Image (cartoon, rainbow, N blue to C red; front, side, top):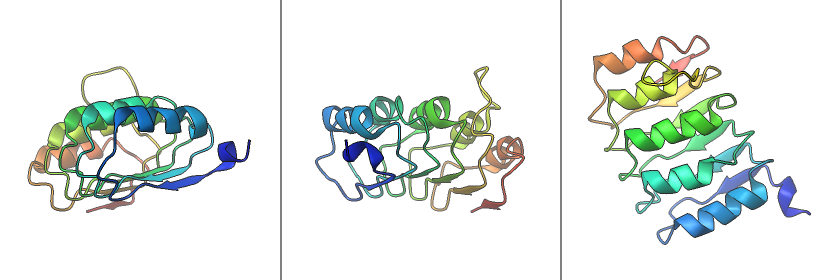
Length: 148
């Protein structure tokens, strides 16, 4: 179908975001999506990220900036599901994440998965829970060229 060829999805500021809709999008488009923006989806939760991310086999960039309800578990979910393909993540303004999110993303915390080993860019600006340990974790991302 034509829908399965969609490479980029911008769902920014979708205030009525819900797990069922995200799961349907993931099932329909997940194989082809390369870039997803959920920027400023203020009601987006960790469990929604888990539902959505489970079929995003080719995802290269993910924008969750301004999603205040996203925390470390949401980062764990997308690093588990999309870690082998992600090159760019924007978490700016995600007040619920801590240095542990960087641990999951880098593969340096808690599981036997390699994390986002292709990551080249990460934006953590305006994330008050990010401390020096986050940079230690991110040093595991050998291809990382940009971090803010």
